[in-house]
Image (cartoon, rainbow, N blue to C red; front, side, top):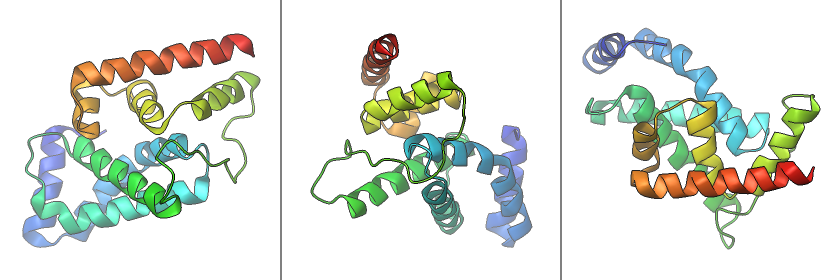
Length: 175
């Protein structure tokens, strides 16, 4: 992972010198995490995850001049990604809420029974809960950073996280 100083140097090169190689370095640094984030939100749909990641990076490149540096680049990027995911859900399911979950169209990410149980439990969570669990546990983001990405108060975020843990615990105990 890049340090904050390295990120800012690369961003400066992108903005001031239109250095696409510098943006490429940012993509290389964040692509695995962003793709994993989308794989969890889309319940393993690799094609959709790749499309969302690409759309996120394109939008980030276009909007890079608006990056203020108040938060880490990753926080800003994940916020763009989350907005792209929500936009996709609205386009796909305009009459249903964001809680509507499609079944994955690709093969499972992991083949172990435990991983499949966790994946099934994640599928039972609503979009907000799944996003909180993904960012906090799988992306290992601190609550403050998750709150910035999701544009929520930490207390609200803690409620969603607690509810998600309780749901998953109940689901995993019944399996």
